[in-house]
Image (tube, rainbow, N blue to C red):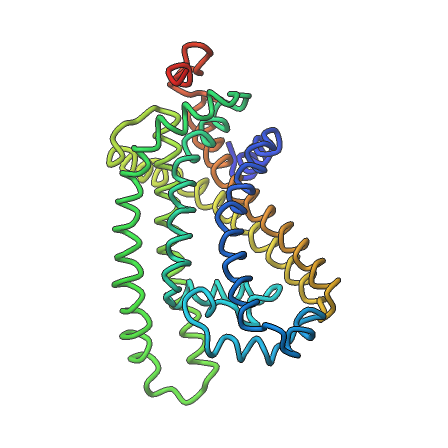
Length: 332
């Protein structure tokens, strides 16, 4: 199976399971809405009955936002002009590439979000691997069956990403970059060097992400219990099918860049009025849905590529749980 055929097959599998997309979107809201209400309370307390409250209700007040951000702490420090529209995407990308620390409450919410994704990953990949309905009990049987396995895998991921952000990133940008640019007098040349180092760091992140993604796929499709074995098997599959795996990753990453570009064009046409702000919220949610769709397509297309190269489309070792023999029956 070619990378393009795998991507198309993966996109088809995601489209055939719209409940999964809406489920992960609801999961995103579940984690983010409490933070939004907490920030709303902080803003209301700061504004009170001041004149700034009227201008803030009528549109974007950049001066007041800057004032609030300067005196805020914790979650409040995230409320700044860069969160508006496409600026939020650029702010997150900059924070990721430069390893900028976030407030503890954001880290806590992100950690909860990651744990929930780890729980759902087994059921999601199992559904895409079977390419057919598994029903609620089948989904949660897969999610629960792989949860603790994927938790062990997450520990290895944490160690690897900890090394990348704790050692490789500082070495590239705090040690190597100053050495390469200390005699440069042209700003554009120094900027090009930094971009090159970003590409090196991004390639390391991408390679790690690919290995861990295929480790999940192999664990689900082959019902592997050893996550160390799944990582080794994933690396072996990528090594034997380097062209297909890298080509598929570039297709998925290209879809992500295309979604960013469309969102950037749409979000750029915003304004200060309340109506435009609410329209911006709607556009932002459409972007979130698109980003989640791409995330699911990553997993579905990688599953399709693995099964296609294995020569068994829809092949999964574990039988589909059926009521009343599924684990859900034990809860009654």
